[in-house]
Image (cartoon, rainbow, N blue to C red; front, side):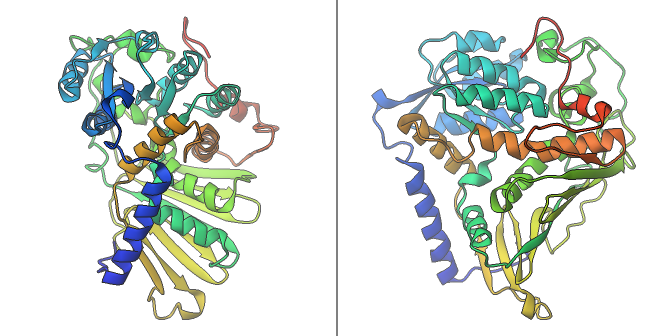
Length: 430
């Protein structure tokens, strides 16, 4: 990060932070006997789903008993990775019916997060569900209300919550080390290749062999199959997701809400599809401004150019306070005194140590055993998804929207308020 070198003292300090986080997460994976294995089922086994599957296959106290995907080729590959002869399904409900199952990983496109999560809670399973918690604000609220009435453990895939340098940075902000924070800047800067390349303008076609396309659509509107809407490219269609504004910026918004509190008053957003002339609906360039009561948060997104602000930070956050500045991303963070801003030399730096995915898994599995709330529970998942959803709504209606955080409504704007939920294709519903 920023070409820094790490001194032995800083390395030991960061290693100690990592050890503390591991201790807080509970017993190390692999330390338990075979009779205490957590039995997992995996719903959705694309790129991110395969990543989770591989990790679980490597944990000695975890046994993969089921894999589920609408794509037959994904299921077959997942079974090989699992190495445990898991049952294979194309319908997630068959996974939830299993009695010899403790935990489900839900790693599907966003439009398939809410319904499986709700039914998993009702089936008595603990859940690791990828972010954002829901396709829209209403889905997150329904999930949260249901989870609060249950005894289920639900962990959201905002894994920075379990990583030492993020934990330390948030603590320093909360302790007032920056003074009063009045401005936060957040950004993602990735070029078209880094974002999957141009999807082009392919014609509609028949689904690939072995794909249950009607199940893939699920609650979304009925549409002909098109490879530009399928697998990785689902991110860029309103029917299925909200682009990186809701799907990746959620990681950044999560840290801001954690450090400074959730108190959004209004959101304005602008942008468009300026550079990538393919079939996508979500913008390749966007900017949003959030009035959060006692601070302002800005967010910018670029898919056309990967130039990185603040040195080599392709994504990140900058907290600006009356006494100092903190810049952070997944590689580490640095802090600057306002009084020394001319020197551009940080007075404190901390680099990433440890694997944040494994730390988040460890936290989740420890909570499955202890029944304590995990680092990113359903309430965290609901709140951290709201800024991205609101920014997309402001972009789609083309005006500033006001937000009533207590009632979770957009007052005086029925067109914008309608986008807080969606219509569900029969027979699917919440």
